[in-house]
Figure 1 (cartoon, rainbow, N blue to C red):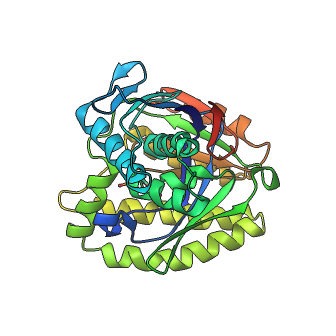
Figure 2: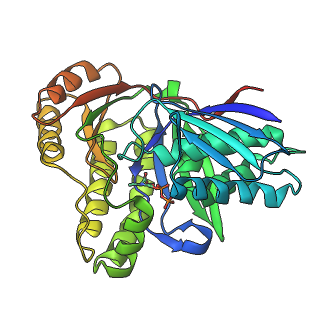
Length: 322
Ligand code: 2P0
């Protein structure tokens, strides 16, 4: 009763921020992302009758009560589908800092549900597994697939779709790591604060349908200029609505802002590149195929950037051992 899965983080080009139904973790907006390679979460799950509770080890240490409870809640959703599973020992390792705006919850929960699924009798189908991943973490279902992925709102729930295989448009990503510390306000709390206090929340929701359509079109056309416009717009709108919450959420550091200006300057001079920023200070530069060398060198020179991580587009979550 043991399986190992790997998953990669994803970064959203059209952002998810806000929940329509917190009790079901239903996003208020659809989102479009790219799955990365290089950064990896590897998770081993073992169900054992002798266990009297779930045990989570993260990067070699016993996990905090908060993280352990979140993993148990996710396992409970799977146990509801297949009663009799019992408790689990979960051992997870990230090749990158946890909770610092590198989408660790996305790869964490994608790896977790992917490792558990082959142990279910019978395994869940793709749509049901994606639904469970989404309830565990809204960005996690996007890491189940590789390449360009959309999590669309449909009916009373969400539908996961691959828009393009990673080989069909091999964009490159440079992550300028500004801080390895965990962010002060996590995404879940930040989204709720934004929904309940930001005067711009309705305006933010209204940007989503147009942005999703524009991004779908730009991806189908492999048009990086068009994708740059929509992705930077969605990122800045997400941060604007969060900054207007009370108290305002400012995830950026000074190097984040310097990096943003640098990326725009590089683009003005002809490099196909645009930025995006998630709920943390890291700046992610998305580059056209073969264009990341100059971008990585330039971002490494920004004062306060502690590391530059380079990625291509990655595969979806998968089982790697039984
Ligand atoms: C995104 N983020 O679309 C956006 C942009 C962060 C900034 O999805 O509450 O940590 O678990 O559903 O999965 C963060 O989402 O939030 C996120 P929950 P999660 O990538």
